[in-house]
Length: 172
Image (cartoon, rainbow, N blue to C red; front, side, top):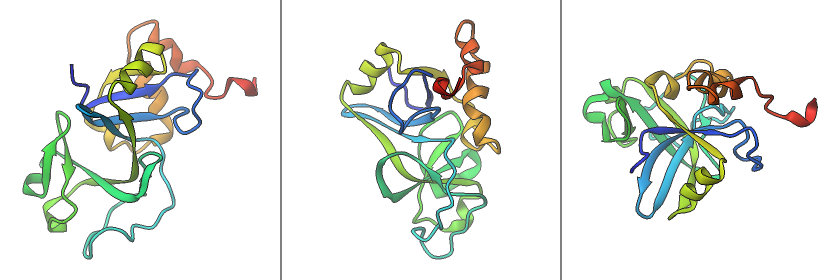
């Protein structure tokens, strides 16, 4: 079963600092692996890699540790012909070569998270990730700092209880 368009919510016990407290939106899951972007890591990066004429509201997000020099844009369903490849119910991978006016609402990510064939499935089975249904508001949230807890809190018990778990239990 493809998880494209789903969220991966980092388990509180996930030991990889690249993904601690992360909420990842999967833009591809299948052969030969999986690709996603971290939704809750805003940066102070300038948007110098976008084609001329493009402007975005808000920050660029750190999409993941793989190829941070590339830009990935996600657009909502109203993007029209300026977007291609539907990756969620209302989310499209944006064509950053299109005319900027054709993509009215976009979120830009620097880099991505990637998994080889079978790697993500192994991490899910081990309990590193919680798979959750994505909502359009997750991708374009105005509160990226609260996204991890917000997504967990709308899950059924006992998963919702993880929303109150400290992001860094060693600080207790």
